Length: 131
Image 1 (cartoon, rainbow, N blue to C red):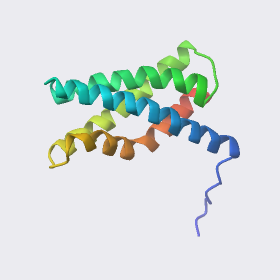
Image 2: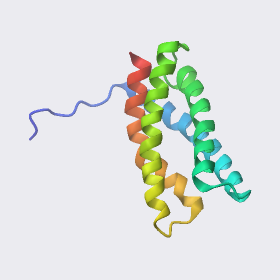
Image 3: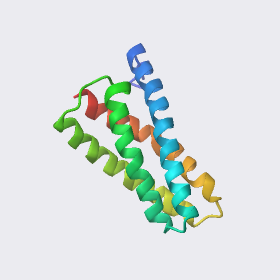
Image 4: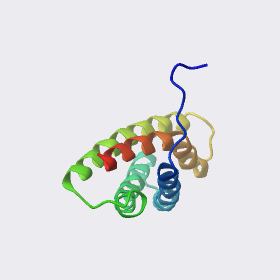
């Protein structure tokens, strides 16, 4: 038995997480479409992934602000969000780079990266949007 029992997330937190998943799915689809389109056109894989990530970042910030956490745009949140997604990008890029060393089909690379890194992003973005 742990000395620090886990608290059950509040109903509000669970709803935020559900909205975060939906918003993330929309932004993920945009990222994946951009990435696959650019790789189909012969763009360098890392550049294609990075441009897909940029499209994800912009759409995700706006949707996270207005839909997920129901807050207003602010300079402080924008800076905090930029820092958090910078960290998230490095985590994703590390996973992406490791997957390039495996025989993973390109169409599965982005979903695998997101599945591994997604929980980290929720914690960071929620912290930024709530302070």
